[in-house]
Length: 37
Image (tube, rainbow, N blue to C red):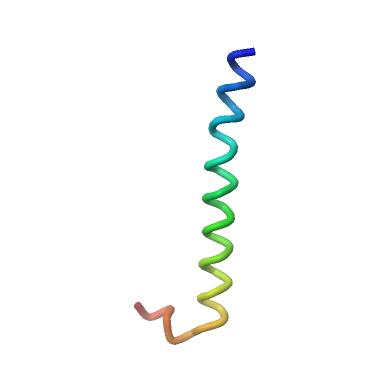
């Protein structure tokens, strides 16, 4: 039970971090100008 809770608390920030990375890549591909900064 504890192990399941332990993984669930770590999986949410992980998915959020992946979402942010994908979002950032999406914006960088949309605006090539901002990729220099």
